[in-house]
Image: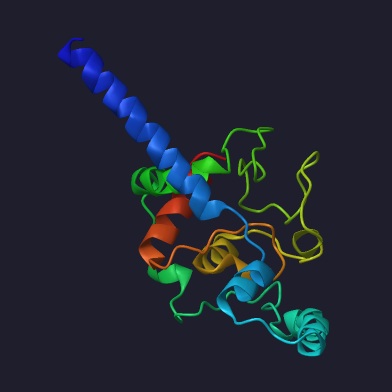
Length: 181
């Protein structure tokens, strides 16, 4: 085997491994599964009462209003200048589940022309009820807030991605989405 083919196969293997890791990071695991595996077994009466309390506890984490763009960290989108080239690199994580091509839905909906679009509005994609009923319009400021911690902004979203804590990377991704939509 030649050095060039070894390098090529090594790159393919690296790409497959990176994709597998990205999918594992985006995989959905129900919170009940995590809690059950990390806590000791409870008596049936206690388990039943805890299970009954779980659905009532979920709505307590209210989402910010659709027009609220406050972030957890307190930073504002206007404080950052996004770089589309850097955003393209950061978007690699998103590509596992999303496409920027019109009409190309993957695990997540196409992000083509996301800026200015109403949440849950791509025909042919099955959104969570939470997303469809959020009342959100994806402005750059709302995307900046959402990408920080998606489950905070749309509790009940199917998107299991934990978010992008770095505000500059979020601004870069938004610049990339604006440039390609």
